[in-house]
Length: 423
Image 1 (cartoon, rainbow, N blue to C red):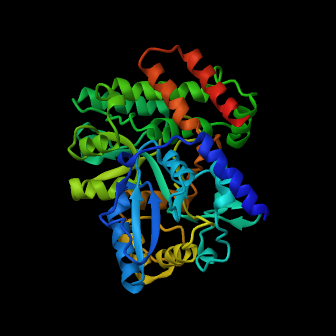
Image 2 (image 1 turned 45 degrees about the vertical axis):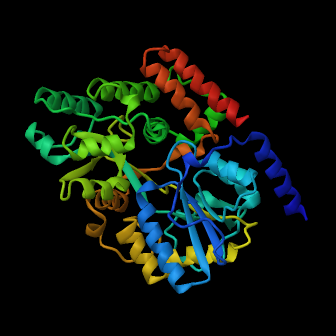
Image 3 (image 1 turned 60 degrees about the vertical axis):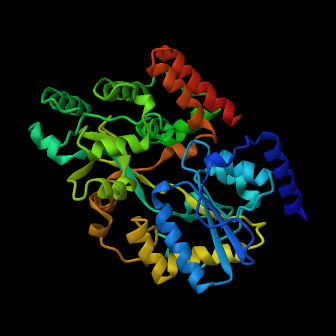
């Protein structure tokens, strides 16, 4: 009874706070949503790059389970979590969906199925399930292991006479200036995509602190001063550098724009991760690329941010939750699922029992694995920020880098956003 009461209150909360979205925000599979007489499993997820492979895996599951029809929906823009909230609030079917942070876990826990006893749990690599564990119960299956930084074109660096990667920020600036002097655009920036600047890149500010988790606690309780924080100001200088030596109007270009431009040799670097490998292989097969850590300060030099991007979660109130759990089991333990994870999704599996060759995943994942094996990595600390932070601070970054805000005002606004959302 207690769970039903909590769930009822949670749904009321969603109805009050949810921002409804229309179908234009969703990319649906070609499967007809009309009643087919089969049990329908509705999966919402946000990674556009795996949609075709996920459809292939869903088809394989349907072949062995002819009474099941899997409907895939994808929202890869800024509104994924608003879309999910809207679907729940409207009473629409949501059987499997994604969450990524601790704050999201606390918000969604009333409707999450406990997955602690699923067959794939013993195979999880150490630490990969920690973020979605609450009171000893696991509420999500990790997607993959990912890492990111500046992806660079080896050919263009060689043309500029650059043979060694920078180990200090001063060396990084020198490399950028050298590329520019040789007529090579150093960066193509996709800052229209909020997560590039305000999530992945901003993570450097958090990770570059002496005590990142303590720093985040200070932001949440209002005791941290960003105005005088050296790493924060260094990071803003870095972003200004990328804008100075990048294409015009960086906030008008998104993820697909940067990957396409990079594949055509229009810039030496983009700030992305191993998830772009498939797209680059499709656009420019055999492109010689590497993944460069950002040496913002000594704590970050020679290290990549590596972590779990998101988790598959099951709606505890779903009428087909047993099918949903079985599909996740199929993804993680069946031969078809394991092969698809490596060769279809091209994920670094978060499981110990899946064998794979990094050459199959491409040079970017091979580098992520190399840094991870050597212990040269740091965490994705933005997951400790209050839910909603990333989108709100992105608006202020747009204003600041467009010359509409002073730096002090920007930093004070960021402090206020994080404090207000946390309290």
